[in-house]
Image 1 (spheres, rainbow, N blue to C red):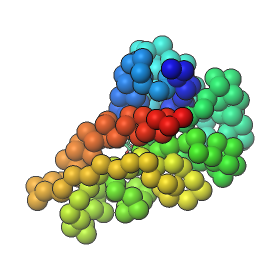
Image 2 (cartoon, protein in one colour):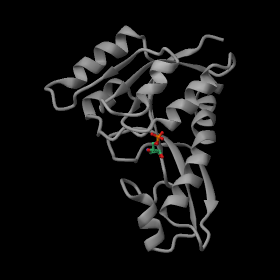
Image 3 (cartoon, rainbow, N blue to C red):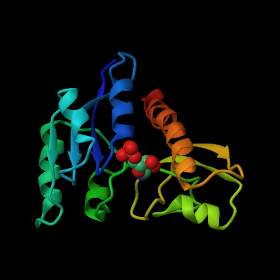
Image 4 (cartoon, helix red, strand yellow):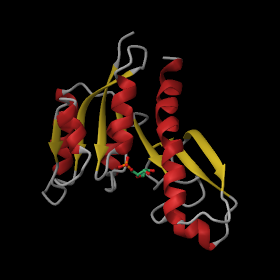
Length: 187
Ligand code: GRF
């Protein structure tokens, strides 16, 4: 099996990145993490790049034409899949067009419900019955691309934001790898 060169975009903790790195070390997992991009110099996730000796770059999104710099790196590393794993920056339409069908994101809600930020507090506010996560393709609409897969769990009375986050992330660590396997199953 020829593994697809993959780039993971992060901004923070990088626990999904860490999880994907560990899956990708398995010979039968369809991707290799070839590059990590962070828009935050202090992102904890960068430590996983260092630990596992994966090339990484910091992108200053305040600099002009920073996406052109990203394009160059994606070409250099022959990237054919981009995983957004807690990347807190909107990707331009030009970028999406260039990599259409090749950018996936993980979102901490059962989309189309609770797009955007602060998902857990909004869920609790409206007494939602179920929470979960969604892996989806990225298109021009925020959290609006086609779903690849979702995983759900029931919200219990004692759940607060912190607990919902923990439970959701536990599911994310299964959902992201499964979605990647699903994408490449028929390729
Ligand atoms: C995840 O919970 C994901 O749903 C959201 O950002 C979070 C990133 O967490 N998009 P981590 O950096 O992978 O720990």
